Length: 124
Length: 111
Image (tube, rainbow over all chains, first blue to last red; front, side, top):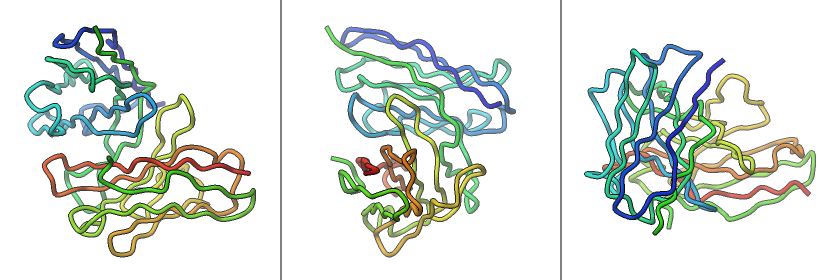
């Protein structure tokens, strides 16, 4: 059974830092794109960052470029999101999601399994 | 404001069919066949229902179908059931640097 378990969410002051983790099990982690998708309270979904299987390719939404860093450790079946210079607008539930490749692309992917999410609150 | 436009709400009675629209531009929905739909029940993680415009992941009921015409994608749910009541989000590839864009979501109410 595919499982994704996020951790690391917390209350942090504006300008602070936080590191999220996602522990994966039930599938061969090293063969999948992985992503972080967030959802602000009562709002819609936003893809924050994506990382290729070997970590060689990464994508970020414009609003987090230069502040967030996605990484992975395939030996530990783990995905990470380092978040620096946090702002109030980063407040959201952050989901770890596995990538399902499009049938017509070798990189574009969808999110076929999600964790339960971890809440990040940025407030003074 | 989300890049893709969805109706805020739709409703239908059990057994009926409903369609949720998702309107974008030639830079996303209209230009590429990379459209997906997600279902989200309150307090739960989203679930992938449709990808590549028309494909269903394994385990998703064939009551769910996707289509696209021009800059508008659609999700149709036939034989509406109480368990279908949820929020639905469309998503598309976008030629902007972010690559992934979502709609604002549609709340489906089963009357």
